[in-house]
Length: 376
Image (tube, rainbow, N blue to C red; front, side, top):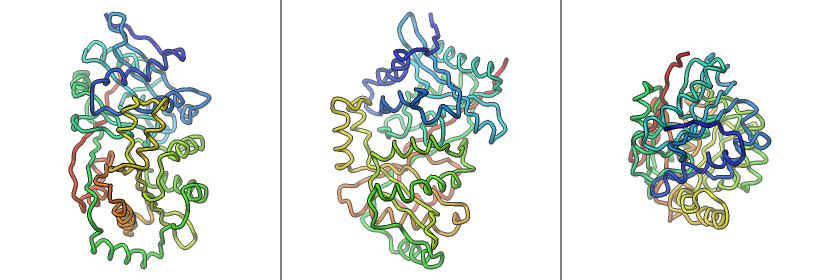
């Protein structure tokens, strides 16, 4: 027998966050979120996102034992921007039991209907920087810290309930080259000369964030304006993102382009992979998690390409090529670096796929956002 319970206490919220860590305890590819980050996200006084959204979380019990979890997000700015009435299915995990998955999704659907929604889709988070997409290819690849991992049977459960594809993301493993191709260097130099753009240099991580952090997020909003499901970041979300990224940022893996007026027009950001460190600590910072993460930040052979953004007026100027050239030059200087992870790229983002195509790559993951109309 399966029963569904709405999360209503701090103890239940902790069980909700902990469930996937226990579900995947013997899986060598799953990488958990940081427990403290997830706890803060769903704690009203600490969350950078709950001022823009209504959220409902559910736990599923099979014969009295915890067997699954699922959350619903009604993201008001997104529904307003796209003129939709959608509830986002988020952070869903379950044992391989169709009754469990069906009742969890039904609980989120019923809540969405009660709030006037007519569509459910996901898995999605609070914004485009949150984890999104159900993994449908790449189950034998170590996940990144920034993405979901799920068992292969999840897809069958979704499609059994008549969910259909709404969007796919593709991910690449990228081999760090021995040198920057001369053609790329010439192109980068030509574009910089033609446009007058220059790269920010000589600043520490703290100085860069203080001077250009807000502008970088402005570029992100503009660049991602037409990206699937993306919304402008609220001031509270901006502060949360800067706080979250500040720990893992490495000045050597950041490239920021400014124009003659010292205005940011493009940026690229990669971070050292902390996947294995977080995995080994099962998402906890104590007692040894923080030490392992700090060690990974200094000693790593893999990086995650997190964000690349260019304001629309420079999108066709060659600025993305400058970013790639600059970042590749930086990566080559670290002899320990062997591979990079592209993280999710929309399958229709042909320009980005073309840029990655200039490197030796391996397409190793695909993830999907499913959608379904709600019936009253």
